[in-house]
Length: 342
Ligand code: CIZ
Image (tube, rainbow, N blue to C red; front, side, top):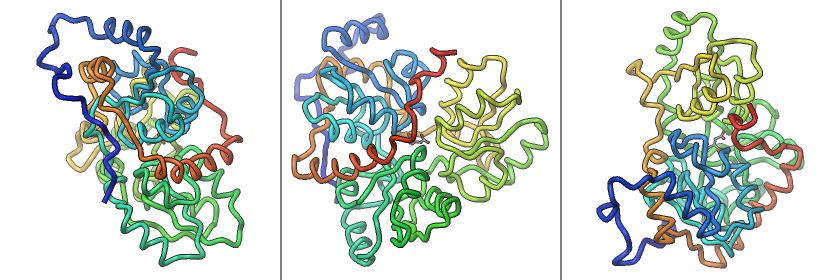
């Protein structure tokens, strides 16, 4: 069972049905941002129009760092629910709102706290290294949290004689185990988006685009990673395509990151990696897609859906998150919106 960490808008709160269809939403959100002393944080997997109005666009690591450091009174977290939870765990004094309470994550779903507790209990000598894509309860049961941009660096800092439990993404875990040579017991979870890429269709696409470089996220299965010229986190993939002299890329991660790539490198071509039907829209995360400008506006007006975490759970989940931040000092912060610097 997972604790419900979202407080919904009260009865009588403004709803989409109340919105004036002629409302200029970006301008209205901007007004609210000032009135409420709010910061809008957006993940790379958000729709382009949301990325464009955010104060900071990034991956989970940099968004966590931003949430921990902000002096804004309200954090509007445009991503999925566990990301909003991380912001609240790190900044309990702030109001943290999310546009849609139903924006979940398949990895979080695949790792329920009661089952994870038993998994840990069955491996009492192991260090529990847990991917940030999990619930606050699972974080609280972990020794250290990682993201895809710091997992390798963190695992390399763990005592060499300690076996590791890695949850919930088995592909990321297998990739890090291979890179570091560490013994790892993997939780059998995966991300619905990265799991659906098709090796057969990728090979066909490569034949049609022989000069294209393939950049893949380590949440992809090994069959896809085996075709990659670069394997890395979202920010790693972004850096790779911007620095590479190549002009064409096949991108094997959630496709909305291509928005930042096209802004930063308008002369280059970015092709989403295909799923089994050969199409590309299957790489759009249905949870991330729940967020819209309307819902961002309403969340700011209503101060809800808001993240609220029981204090004992928050304190327990804070420990492995703080450990992550301490062990990530060697991983520099990205600029937040590569297009702004380009
Ligand atoms: O860590 C994140 O934000 C995710 C979900 C992917 C990545 O590689 O940045």
